[in-house]
Image (cartoon, rainbow, N blue to C red; front, side, top):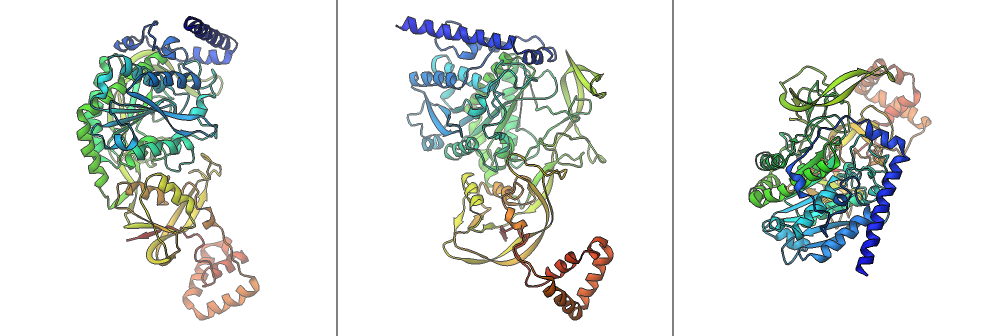
Length: 633
């Protein structure tokens, strides 16, 4: 019977491979996209010895397919279920469900007797949380993690768990993973079947860490809050230009809110991880983003996307976070093996230096900046360096000399397009070494003073609920309370992106505004909450509640009702009232005359004039354009 089952499995595997081959044959556009990629440099490394033999009973589906394909959701879950059921040191749990009903599973690898969230949080062993497939077409981490778990359970890698614990999420974007096609990600060299970037709601999970719209990211934040990992790793695959590096990673830089963690990542993690990768035949490097978004002739820029992204979110909540970006133009096997080496290295580094990391994390969590930057900018650039702002041309006069980077690059030539009449880079597949400018966002931008606490009215229950999901501590008042606070009044505002294009982004209509602070005695009703900034997540609370932050709930459009007026006044009332106001106040009359003189459109608009006077009266709605969150000092 077992032989019959085995033969059926082999037959199914053969049929699947035939299907993939036929699909590629009848999909000329997909195969053409792969064939016109820049030439790949030949690669062989020590990490190839990690690949299981063909007769190994625990060979992974990717290894069995020679890394040509990656297993689908059901194949992945079934393989992991079999592995974890057979191993006493592995267990699999669901951390949530997607909107299409798929379980988001997490593997717990530990030699502890009690592997509950509370027990692992209290353990003296440092805990690594690694996730793959946040963008489901970038699935290297899944197959690497499956290989590593196999070797931990049945190979020679159980030693990794002697001084560290491991949590692994093989597929975060489980619905996007099943929107698999040879037509996805034409700029990536394998696997043949790639998942989709966004989830079933067409939302990018790596833009959701602050707003928490998706079940997937809510599940991850719940894991972070309950297990309190020492190190968080998010595995991606790049887009963009060509270079020699196959494994690049960031979360390691001069800017940010966690200086002690940053020092550990630079001096402990990066040094050891780079050495491990090189010893196995890989070429590690920094995150690569060409300044001109084409080649590196103008330099490389370190982009900071803000806490909507995993690495910046980790930074603001003082959680050591590594963003991995494997190079899309390297073969799939090479990328998977490099990821395996990096995951193993992370566990070894935690085992050796986890105590120092814990100390660094505690220092950063206890730090309370008096003035908190809402963003970071490159000193040589006028604009904030953002991942979502693809155009990052250097403009303005340089205020400081940029760093330099000894780039392990790939030769290219600039060609004249016969299609667009523009220019494009043609990568030639030949290694070159050059020194280029390296722009880093080390300058704080939009400093905001730290209040003692924030007050949020009970009517903003959705914002309160999402703040709780982040793990931010707050207190709810049982009776109405009048509080002396500072509040923001909006002066000018617009909906849409920074170019004033009114269009939705990630399911929201964003808003930007200039504000004016005013002191008020504000009555907060029963059910309102106050949030102290004297807590480990106090910095995160500030970025979520300050309108100057591009990732605040204000900026994401969670306060739309403050932009609407609900009471008006008729002209037959306002006209005589305006005359009386001018007669009784010479100062107002002077202000009115100057307003007409400097604003010709206003001077010709009767409704605007009467509205201006209406705004000077006590009848005007004093909550119109008032941001309802109070700042107490």
